[in-house]
Image (cartoon, rainbow, N blue to C red; front, top):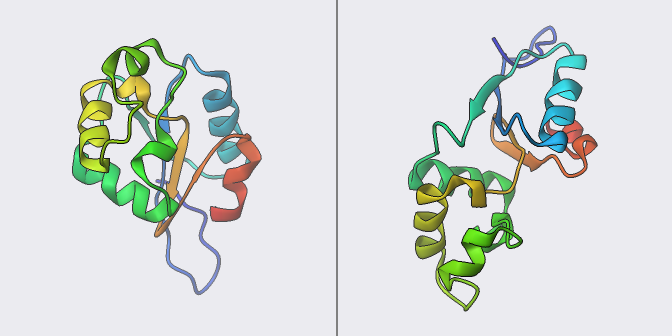
Length: 125
């Protein structure tokens, strides 16, 4: 399951942190499937990633926690976290409130990309 293998290469699992209610997330999932890849689909609102998983994803993205927070969400505005707080505090907030995690995030091996626009994930597949 996952990843597209070519002769002489290892098979890589592709994971999408997906919100089925989000049009960009649905478009990104369809784009991955159109590439012949059956990704592991994580409905992160029902099964939020752990702090350790988010740190791993951030490392692959080359980003900081603040870069993947959905700042337009009401929960973020009411959290008081718009001030300059550390990554650990933001990660804890995202795990507690997964709606705050930018979507979709696609992970393929040691690379990751945010599907905004959906075509942004093609470089890592």
